Image (tube, rainbow, N blue to C red; front, side):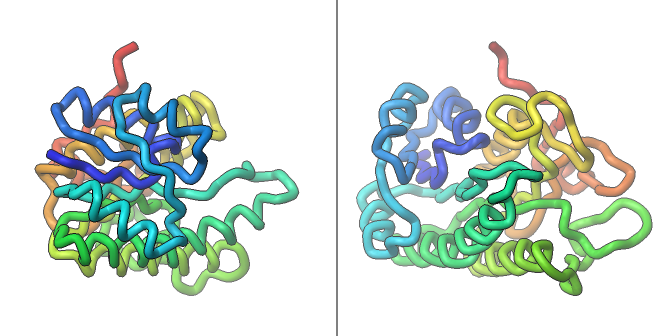
Length: 239
């Protein structure tokens, strides 16, 4: 299968590309930085340098790759929590989720692609008791920086679910190689390897809709992903 992986140089993208290649898929991987192109090639992707905010260039890149599926793993999270520029990073990431996702979905539609798999987050549900499931409301009453994040996620998910085979993966807080937290999980948590495998599984097993992708947690249910995708939060990439 031909895959257009937007954000191939990110924490999940770097783990996902080898999984896709090992499964026999062809991968066109995007990066905004020409300096990262060689690293993507070493992972097995055909690198394409493109900025998701440049809608015409993105549309040309998608059409040239002629993929069967688009996977959206784009983020803009250069600044860790607790740093002076963290809120600036949240604003940039929200813009990427809103404008970048819209550009990517528009490009997919123009190329006649029906299946788009997008990275979302599972820690913006409205407060409530018990394990949150995919049909529970998001925290639309949030304020401040959290509101900016919720607004970005709402836009990303709405755009993705416009697609005939739009699939939203709501990831827990990432940990593992290339993440802010290293090997220390913070619930609701998901290891970056398990997150990558969920995207691989969604290529062929997922149906239109939303899936929580996280480790077993009393506050968040992963039952749908386990049942429908065969998701295993214990999955790790073999060294």
